[in-house]
Length: 317
Length: 267
Image (cartoon, rainbow over all chains, first blue to last red; front, side, top):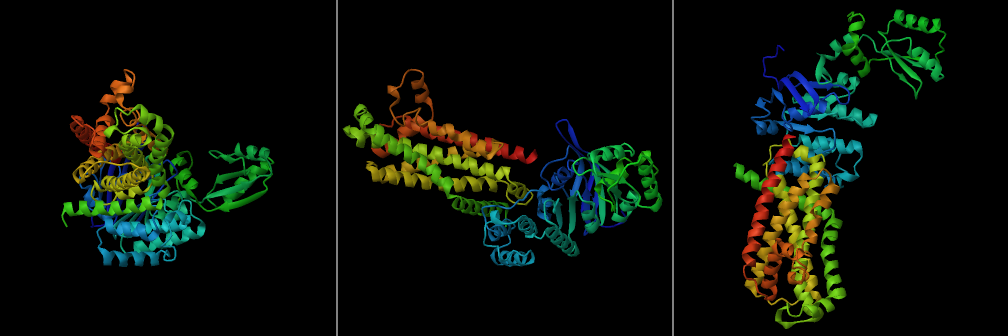
């Protein structure tokens, strides 16, 4: 990194095992101040463990981590004073109202009455929670709860914010709103570290993306750099019955059929030539395809590209 | 502000939050205070007449019958109230530890002890309020303590000290529990201990084996001391044992709870 500033987050050689299971196997990360960094990976890749280590919740077995200039082990309170964390699972107090939840955070941040009140009103307004502020959080919808959660994280004006799968389980509209909130935050100069299972989310938001697979970073770069490596997404084939589906599955390497939907996703670079060769192959074996669509890259494609590609030709780009 | 000021202000914040939670969840408190009242009514009105006549030699001031038994059993019921109330401590601690809120609190620069202190103080208030309610019910039924102001003060102090000890024990049990359900069950043995001591009948009437257990378990000297303070029965060395047990349980449980909380932080 050419940035002369000290990175907001710097992790070197982070390892963590739970019993026999190695969850993180030597992770190196650097996140520049004021940028959005996305850690992309499937369930069980170790994303949440990484967030828990970065946010002082658990220690790494080995490696060093500095957040906002402080060591997460030796200067945990220094880190805690600079960060805000919104976990994967809601961290709001269900028995308290939205207003009381925010008041609790204001008090624990030692904001003082007038300053705390002003900050609470500002955040209620910003996250569209004014009308429900007097209702217990247990009555909130999923989207409202996430917004309250994020508002609670922001009370102390943290410089580094961790968002663990901030949009998992949200409906598309709430997801868009959350994206807008995250962009707005980044625009105000804070550093954002988010984890996600969705490439489109990382693509929309992040300045840099790291792909985590089985505890290792398997690819890292800007969204454009990563997408160039993916080449072109996949072709979605819909079949009329299981016989056709299984016959087609046998033709392609490394594909898994969806028996329920009778769908097969075949990786493709999206060029006319590759599409023609795919159709010819199906024709040769007289396999009837009911419907065909070309899909833009998703996480599966990234994984195919960065973890299983060695047998095929390397990226052409 | 200094570190100490933060500790005090964070603990007060957590106390306020926990009291608010207890108010929002009144069924828990009602259930916990209801149990000793049910036992009080059961033992006084169902068994009390017969027990009182049978125990007349052990009863203060030569009373007998139902009224005499009410005076005998009330101190035991008050300790049962404490034992029942601390189940609530274990439940609310476990609710916090198994929910998402604890991770949020742990990633904030707040005084380390404030989370547990907040729970201990809030459930202390809840427990003492339960004691007031149960004492009121006993007096309404005809409980007539002979205590003067000084004895009342000592009795209140003893109950508070014992409650403090059991609350720390329940806090540790709540921290040790993997789920809220487990946490609501593990402290339940405490509510049976007044039966296996001198809470309901004198230990001298029990068979060998059980009698030894009953004589040496902590509830017995505490019951005897409380009974002596309230109704004027003989206290003797029980007072020393009552205080020693309470302080011992409080200290051991506090250290256990602190260890569990720190271990959870690391795990």
